[in-house]
Structures are given as C-alpha cells and as structure tokens.
Image (tube, rainbow, N blue to C red):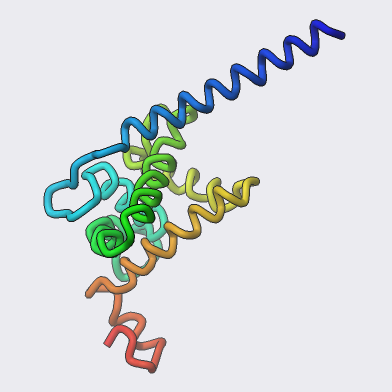
Length: 169
C-alpha cells in the first residue's frame, strides 16, 4: 500500500542520513589529528589501534616469541605510511579510525580499549565478515601489522630457522 511505501522510503532516508552522519563523525574525529609523540604521521589513537590489533593477532597465550602489543607495530607502520603518497596514507588512516570505532554499538568502546577476549572476537568477526570490503580492509591491515611484527628483533630470528634464504638472520 501507499503507507507501506512511504514508511519504507522514510526508513531508507533515515538510514542514509544515519550512515552519512556516522561517516561524518569518524571523518571529523580523524581529520587533521596531529602525529603522536615519537611518530611521523600517526596519532596516538592510531598507534594504539594498531598495537591492539597486533595483540589480537598475536595473543599472549599463542606460544609465539612476542606478544603483539609488545612489538610496538604502530611505530613501524607509521614509518611505512610516512613514505607513501599522502592520499594513500590518509585513506589508510581513515580506515584505522573506522575499524577502531566499529565495536562501539556492541561494546560501547573503541577497539583499542577492548579486553583481549573481546578484541579477538571482533577480529574474528572482521575476517569472516559477510562483506568482502570489510574482509579486504582487514586483510590489508593484517599485512602491515604482520610485517611489522615479523621484523621485530625478538621475532625475526624465529623465521631464520624456517627460511634458509637469510630472512631473520
């Protein structure tokens, strides 16, 4: 009926406005954040998100040589991003903020503030998400974080045993 059609149109309009406002809030919170102490490009929140992501990827109980948060991957990723074209690094920084804010509706806090168990659940949800765009974004960040973790002096020698090409030596 006409009422149903108008209600559906109103709901769709409200969802579009809500999505735009949400995107606008993330953009406003992110835009022109100053670099954190000891970083070239990334803010303290961005470094904290990357370190929290590393800790969810490389947890303390995994038997790995170094817990993710102890590798300080945010500082390494900061160096990589500072060498990129500004438009690329801005998009990556925006994605860091978007993912950091992603758990807000469910957990009422940013990813970087989640308990380890909750961060692991959120990460698992991202890598198995229905939307390929979310999975792809997380996979891209996974590469940056894993690269930074794997070249840490406490981790790299572990790979030297496995790869005879000289990696980690």
